[in-house]
Length: 94
Image 1 (cartoon, helix red, strand yellow):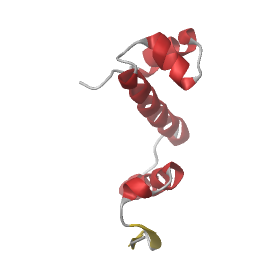
Image 2 (cartoon, rainbow, N blue to C red; image 1 turned 120 degrees about the vertical axis):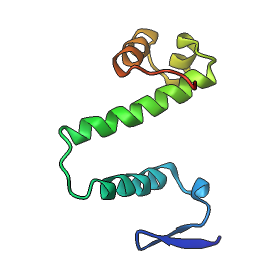
Image 3 (cartoon, helix red, strand yellow; image 1 turned 30 degrees about the horizontal axis):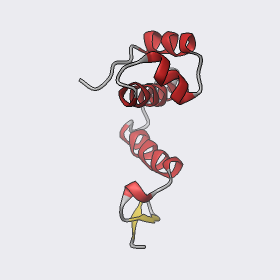
Image 4 (tube, one colour; image 1 turned 30 degrees about the vertical axis):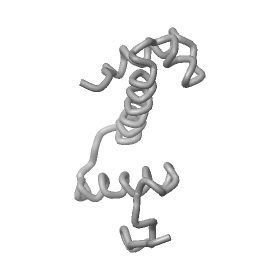
């Protein structure tokens, strides 16, 4: 497998071949670098909401916007999913 250096670490040349956790780790590092040391109030909550929103969008898109199907896909109760979608203002692909 071909590798390249990202942030001083060897990684697969094709990021899509990286494990999801590693891809998130690298992308998060880039995001944090762009802050240039600036403080973000409640950064942890903001980051978790961003990940949550991406997961919910994927589930909804893969279920053609059907909450029950998306909830089943994620292993969530439909009402829990509906609350999360509303709270995070999640929309499918525009």
